[in-house]
Image (cartoon, rainbow, N blue to C red; front, side, top):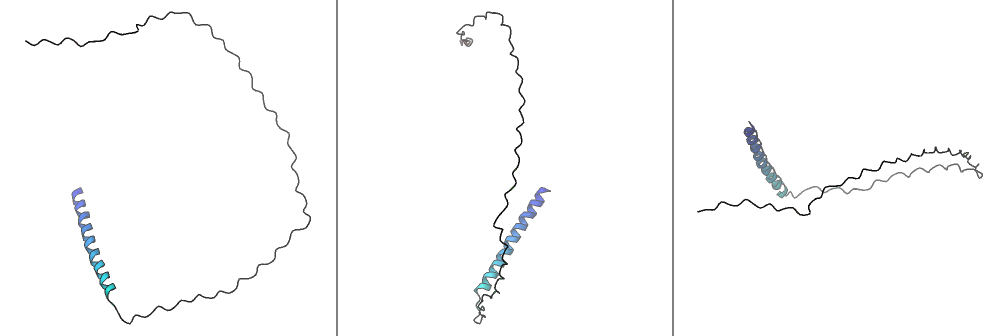
Length: 117
């Protein structure tokens, strides 16, 4: 089923590519034709705009501006105190001796190979 759909998509792609070649050739043919009496493009003039209306004058602020009210200062809240953590004392560890660890290990050699006669 998948092979039929891929073949159809491939055939559609090929058909579209050939059809676009014909359109491209037709467009080139139209561009290469010349007509001697083409009308000229009329010159464009900038339209004149009416003048902008004048802005109204805004009222000016009074000469004496009352001062802004002040915000009363709030008392600072007292921070709670952190309780002290008691110190824990651990009993001493019992004295134990560790076993002696050899500083070098014997090397492991491969087993002897059988002799061939």
